[in-house]
Structure formats: C-alpha cells, structure tokens
Amino acid sequence: MSRILLVEDNEMNRDMLSRRLARRSYEVDVAVDGGEALEKAKARPDLILLDMSLPVMDGWTVAAELKADDALRHIPIIALTAHAMVGDRERALAAGCDDYETKPIDFPRLIGKITAMLGDRRTT
Image (tube, rainbow, N blue to C red; front, side):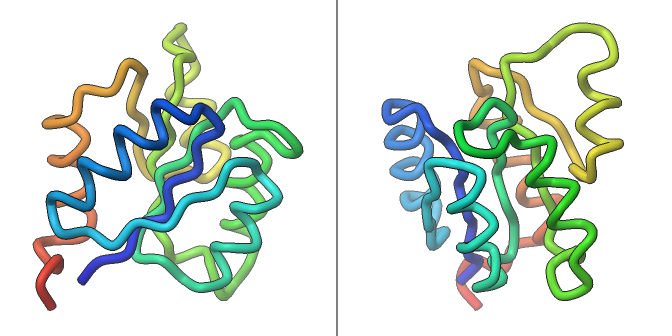
C-alpha cells in the first residue's frame, strides 16, 4: 500500500483530502506545519502532498530541505497551493517539487498525478 504524507494546515482541506485518499486505498499520514512535515518525512512516505503556505516553515523551504537530504530526495512532492500566478509553478518546481496542483483541488486530476508518480501500488 502506498503511503502519502499530506502536509496541510487547513483542517477542512486536510480532512477532505485524507478521507478521499484513504477511500482510494492510500495510507495517509498528516502534518500540519513545515517542521512536522520534515520530521514525518523521515519515515519515507512514497509521496508527499505539500501545501506551500504553512506555519513554522513554508512549503518552499520544506521542499528545498527534503531535496537537499540524500535519504529523502527521491520522494516525489506535489505542491498544493492557492498561488496560481505566473511563475508560481516554476517557483515550486525550482524549490524541489515534482509537480504542482492549484487549490481548490481538482481531485480527479490530483489522483491522476499521484498515479503517474507512484504507478498503481496501492495494493502491494
């Protein structure tokens, strides 16, 4: 079963996404701020969904720190952000994110990105 670390400080977004991912047979762990995200990433989830506007440490910094760590840099990161201005996608990719999804989340599109990154390993 693929494990996803969902890093989201908004309780409603966190609850909605974690429940919908669990229904798709993903194991979901959550973090509510950047510091907690770095700590929980040490468990080496298969993928990280990372809100870019977080307390303690923003997602841009979290992504850069994860990609700078030899033990964690292989974990794919999908940025989740309300930042949809020109250049925001490029900024997320430059910080170390592997893909980018704007809020409000288009869940079918997000699942497509997750599946593309992980393959269908939910039942392995």
